[in-house]
Structures are given as C-alpha cells and as structure tokens.
Image 1: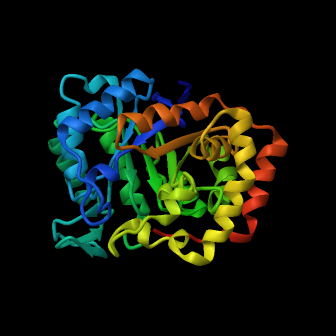
Image 2: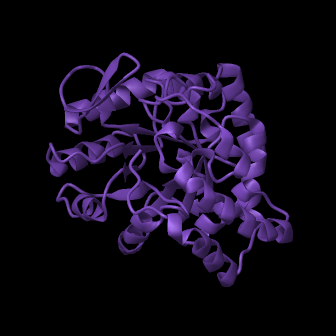
Length: 335
C-alpha cells in the first residue's frame, strides 16, 4: 500500500480508500443488503491489505452504512482514518430540499447548528468520540460560506473532527472556502466524480487543488461497475437503483464500451490485470495527489483493487486508453 498526506492536515491515508455507499443498501443499491458481520470481514480485508481510509455518509442507507461501520469498528477504531459527511439530513429541521427516497425527505443544510447535529448523529451511530475527516456532502449556496467554515474550524479546535473537505462542488467553491476569513486549517480535500468516461470536471479542479495543497479524492472511477468488463453491460437494475440512472445502461453506449474493452484487452494481458485495475491505474496517473475511493462490499473486492497500485502504464498507453472512449465521454454526469 502507498500512503499520502491528506492535503494540509496531519492525516496520513492510504492511496486507496474504502467507499461504503453500497453498504447502506436500500433502493439505491437494490441487489444486496449488508450485515455487521460482513462489514467486519470487509474491514479485516482492508487491514490486511493496508487500507486505513474509510469513507461513509449519514444518507448512505439513511444511517445504515454508519451503523454497520460502528459495529465493525468496535475495538479497532484507531486502526482507521474515518471520514463521513454533513449537510444532507432527514430530520425535518429546515434546509433546502434535496430529494425524497425510501420514505424520507432529505434536505441540504450547511448552517452551523445543522452541521453540529450531523456530527453528533454520526458520532452516535458509529460509536466514536471523533471523526478524522468531515466532508460537506453537497455545497449549498443557500447559506453563508463564512458560517459553514466557521463551525468546521470550531469542530477542529474542539477535537470533534481533524480535517474537513468538500464534495459535489466546483473549483470556485474551493476558492470561496479557502478565502473565508474564518479559515485556519482550511479544506484538506475535495471528493469529486472522475472517470475515464467523464474526466472533465476533475481536470478543471486539479489546478485549484494544487494551488491550495488540497487532495483530490475521486469516486466513480469504475462507473458503478460498468467499467469492470463487458459482462456487466448485460445486467438489469431496478428503476430506483443508481446504476439504472447513468448513461452507460443505455444500449446506445454499449457498442462504444465494447470497443473499449476489446482495445484494452491487450493491455490487460500485457500487465496481467483486470479491466477494473487498468482503469483504476489510469485514474491514479492523472494527478499526483489523487486518492482513489472505491466502493467495495466483499473482501475479494479489496484484494482485487489494491493490485492497481502495482501497475505502471506508459504515457502512450494512458493516452491510448482515453482515445478509445473519446466518442462516448460525457461532459456532465450528476448522479
């Protein structure tokens, strides 16, 4: 495993991070519900392979992901860097409407009192006294940035969190947060969608991250499984499932994806790797301060993913991979 400093914080995190959106189950991930025992085995595999960085959020299964992690972390909390999120809640205490799902109405609320309540709720669900990293899940323009930054910095001074970041944001948002007068430590990372099929947002963000020594954490690099191989294209998902709402489920994209897999097969054979490992290695090569957040629900997924760190693709191989999918790349991909 490789380790990097998380932006301007004191946290040293594994380059590969465990994403636990899928652990929450529910209608968004309709094919499988996880148990506490399975979550514990997943953390066992992470420890075995050197992954110390875990990402979750309150809305992943409306508390289910955090609760499963709380049980799995019992007795080994200090073995992991624990990251969760704030701003999206279903308490009905105000904020801006974000979505309704599974019988809950979720609002986006970045007011200080809401963020403090989010933190307390997450601490309770995960049975811990502190959070290593707290991400503003969706940057919200409805409330003053100065107030949001102020409470995040207060939480650091109080020892409730050790670092904070942004997700589902724009480069201008990072500029605004970093220039808020309340800033002391500042934003340690941004967590944004980035893949070989939709790389544009990330590339616009990279220079601003470098300017502020902010880590870039990519999610969606495997496109929810659609970049793991041609067999995945045959799968069917419920209408509520996240995988039914992204472009690659449509037949019009399948021919382009199959051409890409055919073109990438010689690379997989040459490097002795899977399609998933190949595209993960491609992503890591795009930015020097990249954190690779991968959703994993089984120990075998962990063992497979960390293999991507061993791959060394040449500049020609990297550019050739992207050239193969240029015709089907999309500019905006909002899940």
